[in-house]
Structure formats: C-alpha cells, structure tokens
Amino acid sequence: MRLRVVHCVGFYFPDSTGGTEVYVRDLVSALSRQSVDGTIIAATDGILDRYSWNGVDVVRYPIDATESQRTRPRDVRQRRTSFQDIVEAHQPDIFHLHSWTSGAGLRHLRQVARLGIPTVVTMHVPSALCMRGTMLLYDRQACDGLIDDRRCAECWALDRGLPRPIAPLVTHLPKWDVTDSFVSRMSQRAASLLSARAAAETKARQLRSMATLSDRIVAPSEWVRAALAANAIPSEKVVVSGQAASDAFFDRKQRPLEGHREIVIGFLGRLESYKGADLLVRALSRLPADLPVRMRIAGIGTDPRFTRRFEALVANEPRVTLVGLVEHEQVPDFLADIDVLAVPSRYMETGPIVVQEARALGIPVMGADLGGISERVEDGVDGWLLPFDDPQPWAEAIREAATDRAKLARLSANMHRKRSQDDVASEMAALYRQILADRERAHV
Image (cartoon, helix red, strand yellow):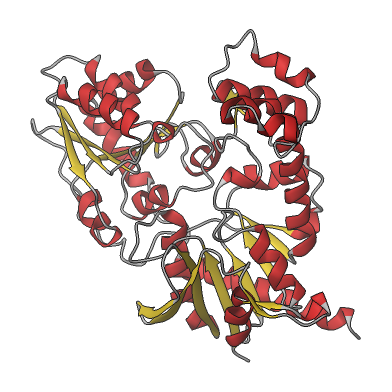
C-alpha cells in the first residue's frame, strides 16, 4: 500500500535554503521508491501559492494560516483554520514536521494533532532545546541539553551581553512573564532578561508538548537523543536517523597531491558568527605567507555587523577568496575543487549534511569537536577534530594538511560514503508504517 505524507518546513526552494530543506527535498524523492508519496507545505511571507519543485507538489501557506479561521461553529473542536484545510486536502497518512519556527512549529503540530493525523517531528536544529540556539553552555562547552530555568537563564543572559559576574543574578529573579504589565513597560532587553527564567520554563513546556503531540521524534544525531532523554522524553518516542548526501555527490576524481601545488581549504555555509568562518581566517593568518595553501569561503550572511568585521578580516589575508552564494546544485562542483572541507561551527550541529557530502566525495574534514560533527568525523582517520574556540590548533591542522601530503591522501582514502538517501528513506518508510500499525492496534 502506498502511503501519503505531508512534509512541513519553515522555508523551501526556490527561497534561500539550508540543510533542512535539502534533506526534505532528497527524502521525498527517495521515499517515492519506498511506495511513499509526498507533498511539501512550507510557510511564506506572501500569499498562498502552489507549484512543483523537482517533480513534487509544493504548497506555500501564509505565515498566519494557523490563525485564519475557515469555519466558526459553536463547538470549538469543529473549527478549522486555513492551515488545517491545506493539510486535510492532501489526506495524509502521516504529517512530518521538519522545522521548529513560527512558520512551522508547535502551533502547526497541535492543529494537525487535533485532526487525528499521526505526526512525526525531526529535530534538524537545537532551537527546541536551547534558548541561545547553540547548545553551548556559557559559550564554553557542549551542553547536555537539560532545560533548567536557572542555568538556562544565566547562559542566555551571557549571550545577551550581560557581564559574566552579573549574569548569575538573573537566576535569583522571579519567573516573570514578559507579558506582565510591569515587565512589559520596560525596554525590550530588560524585559527579556527579567523574564529569562519564565522563558526557559516555557521552552521546557513546549518540548514536552512536542513529545505528547508527536508519535515519534527523529534525532539526526546521538547527542540529540541524549538531550531529549535528559529532559525525560520517553525513549520509545525517539528514533535516531542520520542524514545522507544527495545522489549527486559521487564519482569525484581524486585531486593529485604531488608536486608543489597549493592545498585548498574550503568553507561552505552561512557567514554568521555561529558558523565560525572568521576562526578559519584567523588561523590562516598565523601561518607563513609562503605556505602552499589557500582558502575558498562560500556563503552569505544576514548580520551586517559580523559581515563588516569578517570582510575587514579577509581584506588583510590575500590567500582567502570569497566565493559568495553557492546554490546547492553547484555544491558538488565547489567541493570538487577543494582538498579539505573546514566546518568550524560554534554550535551543536545535528548533522551537518555538508560533512556527509564531503564524505561521499572522499574529502577529509577539519571540524569543530562538537555535536554531530564529532559523531561523523574520526580524528586522525578521516579528518581532524579541533576546538571550536581556539584558532591555533586549526592553524596547526592547516599547516599539516599543506605539508604532509601522504597523511592528506590517507585521510581522503578513509573518507567514503556510509549512508545513502535510500537508507534514510527506508528508515523513514519503516517508521511511518510502524506508527500506523501501532495506531491500528491501539484501536482494536
């Protein structure tokens, strides 16, 4: 029997997209080979729109679709919103939520659950667990994910610029609600700090709601599963299933390492502080000018302050080339022209997919020793795992890549694809069918 699944995301092609949207696109395609048909629905700032992308039907719903009432019977349980109408129109066997944003998040999950449709949530980003969104405790170390209102309030206060000696004072404040009349009259920054403990408690409550409303939660990495367990999310609700590179990532010709040519270090990601491209440039600047190495950095950013600082940093380093935006269809070509992929993230990645893409092409990875990166790269075997906050070890790794061609060749030979899109789709198809079988048994 073919199944019908509606996949819901906060953004989608052809808009600016990231790893989540790439994952969804590839998953829907691979699921079709598992007798699972998919439709993608995604939020938009514009009006309702329908189109096809890569042969898959896409519906873009307005951001306020969960508030737009289509019918208003006296019985509140019978009311329907525009969002519910869109979901119901596709008669899905499963609703699969891939985002945790205002455009596709808890409200949407709650409304689908009211329709009685089984639901799955994949946690592609840490936002459901962390107020900062980085999962770095006090910006110093990986967090275990436990949402504790005092600890989270102090950590969040540091992220908002409160001096380290003062931040602990936030933990002693009452759990003020930001909507409280007294708090709401203050400046936005002050109100946020005063209501930090309440905000942490709200996040914990929302996480519990996710677990209650969903039939399963998919954790792309083991650390996500452990963080959910730390918050007492039932283990039977959680399934670990990692990502895989698109089928387009294959058959890369090995770049010759002999001779005197320069080694190329590549970065591919958003030019934001949390992605760490600036750490790479600082590391390179510590190395001799005659070292045979150069760096290609691909991506764009949305934070003007970081962009200005980063461009000033790059202006002093002639060995760095800024490539700009690289569309996902162009990523294989970008990776084909580098020798090492650098992933210096300053937050706990649940993937990232770009590491899987590098793996499929036999490209060693220099990665931050955090989260999903540390689960996908084996230090000294197929890459380097390095501190997320210190450029010196990165400089030493870059020097080694540029001067020890034999080691670089060995790391490259050990870097190979471990999962395919069909592996991921097979796991998801089995999960969907298990959920439906469980529901059927529960109603017998």
